[in-house]
Length: 439
Image 1 (spheres, rainbow, N blue to C red):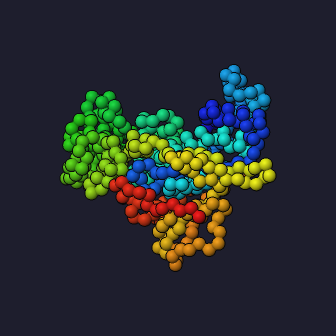
Image 2 (tube, rainbow, N blue to C red; image 1 turned 135 degrees about the horizontal axis):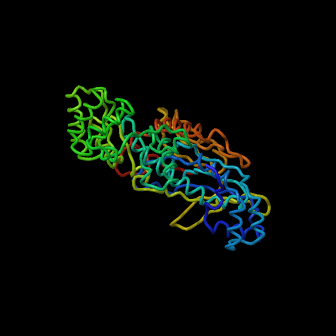
Image 3 (cartoon, rainbow, N blue to C red; image 1 turned 45 degrees about the vertical axis):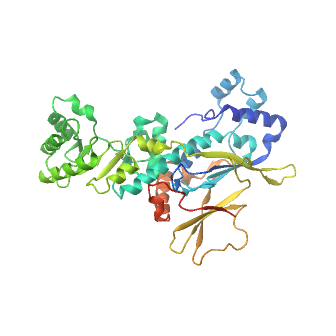
């Protein structure tokens, strides 16, 4: 993706910069943090996604002639600030949780150290990226866990905006989905793509048989035929007639799925198509997928629910100034003290306490650079550090970028899920599966 991302922000960020540069405070070294005060209602854990995209967007956060002219025309900031913006690029440092990591309330997901003026402008970019991508990944991870190893594909591009569709496909892939229907996501992030035909292809032809034979002629008998345009039982029979008993799969997009799937499996076996798979794609979410766990389903395709975070399209993250240097050059912790929106000031580090079975038991957030003194744990417990440096001096670590970074995030998520207590995978309402403690 190319082009400037400088106006992917809110006006008040530039007006704050304008005022802070005017009185000199804009040059103070500052520490900002992105975190979630709570998980979406009923969720027991979250999954971090979006960091790789965010690093690339920060690199594109430059004010070019077109952006500067628009700001000048609309008198958003003073001419002196426009000159400063013309030379702007982020030169600070960023630490955070790796993509694919589980997170809990208070987890310091992103920490940004730079001057106030450099860092405050990134607020909207940070939150719009992490809030959406993490919401999708968190919902997708729940779907993957109840799919019980069956392949699951993201196919929600038509249920969100064109740019969000690409981000959603990436987040779902990190969370364990196997493929996407979105070609741009495949090109940009290296995600496997899938898709064959919709009902329109069947309706285009004079008969269902003609449509099936045309598809088989084009893609071979291992293709997936959509069998519910008309009568499902007749569709299955015609699909096997068109492709033979070596038909790859049939797709079902409607009906009472547990009943329909059982009948289709029995019919396929009776026709000799015992190896033909059944894919279902009818408004699925984690609850309907769980309800099909005992049905002979071979693969799932999920659209609306995954790209909307299964009811929570934003993860509820906030971006707060937590420390700044005073006139003496010392770091001072700062925090909002409202009892309704309490935050904890100061630089933070984080680790997860694992017991002797390598099961997560506690999210530990250390005020400062790390543990001070001897921490008291159960015998056999250990701490797994959670924060890594994502960007140094404005240069992103290439390990977190592009298709390779996306694949690494996907692999990390798979490892992290092995640490969570079994209670994390219950779909019923509940509290976060491990507590968050400050030390």
